[in-house]
Image (tube, rainbow, N blue to C red; front, side, top):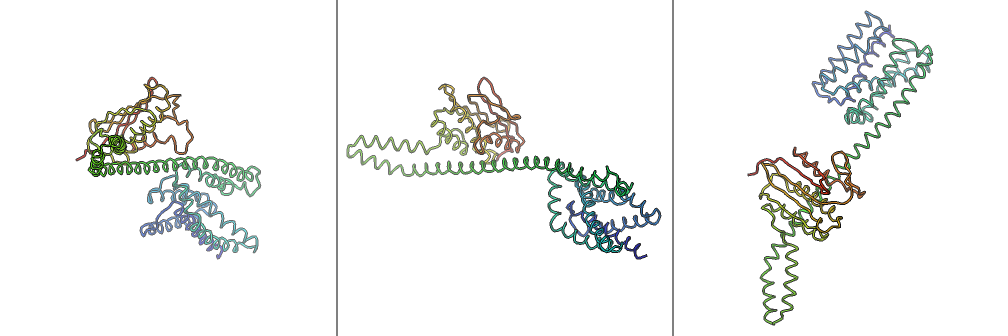
Length: 431
């Protein structure tokens, strides 16, 4: 009688343990309504187990266990707790695998003390410690792995799935494992080893993809930061120009004193140096937009230093529904790539970069054209950089990311030795 009561009590605790661990791995929040639902679920499943036990016996009840316990547990996670089906299945299978740890401790206790009562007691005590360990140290890691991607989740669940099938086929539906069937005995270590190696390989590849994606995000963030710094620098140059203009009366006064002394050479020298200083500070006015003027002035100066001519056809209004940082990143990356490529061209008449920008039908359209030398290799639909500098080659990717974020379009074409970049960004109307 005591053993039967212990069996019923043990079955109830196994149910509680398995469902609780499944909920941990599935990331279910323990709200008041969730706790109530879980309690009702425990009661229903335990009632069904006891009913089957009394009507069909222990052995037949164990054979039905997947249908009366595991499948309902998966359904609970999917239908009530709204967990994705890969996470629900993986959580239940992994919880089943964890149930084997207390079972082993119970078997060790039975072997040491030589009776089945020690098996039950050892099983129940170890279950408490295992649950604490899983909740404290394991559950968060497993949950994050399940949520990383569908592929990772299913891959992680492959080993518990195969053990689940093996356990039922060789111990519940047959006695192959306990009767010493050679194939059954060797099956588990072979499958575990195979899946371990496959998991390591695929998980490593998945991790490398995520590291690469994170590195690209970091580079994009760095480029945006650099764009903001460049924009701040250009604005500071504009402020310096205002100050220079304000100080013009001092320059005129000094020139007047030179004239009074009749020192023509000093006047010419001073005028030349002052003109050069003003030219270096004053942004050229290409359009009505202040930010665009600053950017184009800055890159016109950079192009001139490498003997590249920047031809500008830009007609943009004072206000554009694209924030200054993104606008700076778009124009700066486009011009930097074009000027860098053109500076490698030896023929003088080809050392030109053409940029065109307009608002067309409430869309910002930007296009650049430039000559280049060598061969442009494509990686997907984007040109592949031949340089190995850290962060180099992400300029076009950064522009494409901005365009796609706005739901726009981009085009990269090569025609007769000329590289043509075209970007189109839909914009909200500005007031």
